[in-house]
Length: 255
Length: 255
DNA sequence: TGATGTGAAGTCTTTCACAGCG
DNA sequence: CGCTGTGAAAGACTTCACATCA
Image (cartoon, rainbow over all chains, first blue to last red; front, side, top):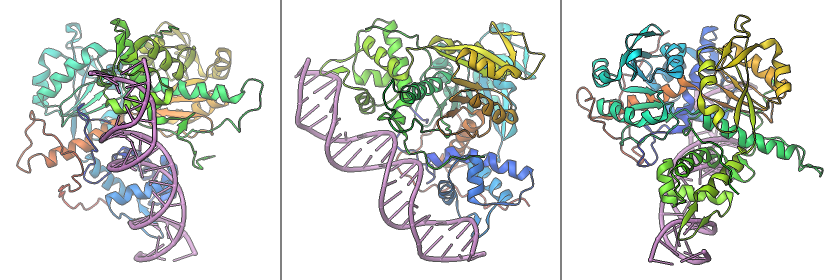
């Protein structure tokens, strides 16, 4: 998931497994929906279904947080929402900067889910002087010359990189030097950061390639030519989360 | 709601571990960069560094594909590019539809990495009649009434959902019914699909929350001192470190 | 000689299955 | 009685370390 390139070992966080941390937002979303419907309690079974995981996993996950349920009853929705929010650090405000206000950066700036939970777009930064001052999603774009000052003035510790691949590492370096310790990278490139800095990547291209891999398999197994199909051609489904790096590769095809 | 959730057994595809599949695109990207620089061969060490993984992992990953290296020398770049491309199914054309042409959908449509590698945006679909006919990224948006026909006419098996959360499941259902078997979901919601359909999700909000979790820990563990110094990125102790002080204020929850 | 390929060991994650509490 | 919480078992993934071979 993240952290310095210098392969960091198991980054267990305060005893909570990374896999569990990655699911907490999922649970939180499901719980929030229940909360809005004024549902008072949920069983692990119900909540698990809503979050798309199995109930044993969910209970195990929650066990890392503490014993927040009631046997024979389930979990108190409001209480759990609060506990998970706190665990995730969402009870505080996180100013975020987005660097690279192109199509994607602008879409991210406009994305509602951003501001929704503790995250606040503190500034938009772009290297193009022509963009400076132009408002995007109601926020004026600032020039990257002022990146360091912007980070410091706003106490930003989370940065989102939505620049072209080539600009990503330099931007990353500047963000880190200015004090950013968490980066969400949308550029199709691997970022190198010092220890203590977390990087998560989101990469359309990688996700598509993974889908293509499975898709190819399905096609191959479905109707195996004219022979008898090996069992049924099913499997997998479910959903997944995760990050994904990489990005650009023309299809070459030597012999 | 068929939650065919009954544990899908395999997490492996054709003997290739899922974790490995997820890294192949990374290797491919690194290899392509080398190829463009006309580098003839790479060692596992070099390639691993470029892809941001460790060399043992990379060698193990490649071992699932076959023995494509030469002892004492390394891997032939062009040959590996081809082998991985083939394994990922990138030697064929994958028509893709994007449903939901809002800020994000439009950004995705414009994203170059899309078309670059075997993936081709076959159609853009939106529910807003006002969008119909309007070209985005040079492709005219079509109305969702015609979704099924569009899927079938173009032989689409991969769909990208960039609609608001509420529309995602219905759109997903229609895509699947029309023949789509792989879905990349950008909507912040859990999709339920029948077995045999793959879903991968990309969720900004979840990624940020995961970062916030770690960020919060850094701040708390830093120097159990006063305020947290920004610039100096402290590192997290690797390994174990089970003990996370984090004596957060025992929270009382909101009623 | 030098780097791959790979059993084996180690670590993390998921799942099972049931004790135990409300 | 129902559902949580959790040891224990199973499984997946990573890392080690070295035999192996070009």
